[in-house]
Length: 127
Image (cartoon, helix red, strand yellow):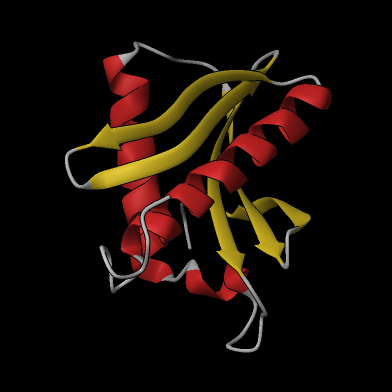
């Protein structure tokens, strides 16, 4: 890991921590019978942290973390703009991969002090 003097903002450490939590979330889903289709899938500036599948269900997962939770629960940071971006990226993923006829779901996985919490069907595209 880079020292704080090389990266005063801590951005590289936050990115690495985010990637580490995404890996933990992926293992959580694999242990629940899901197959990981994509890690950090990008559609231009939009990103989906995990895309997973079990049978005919495809789930788009946003992973959020907080070291303390004192500034609110991480799930609260999935605001309307983020939901819209996730929905648009999910639509592009489905089109690019010619996927039709599957059930779709948007989940959020949060970590506070390293503790995983899963919010299945956290929001719908209609919101």
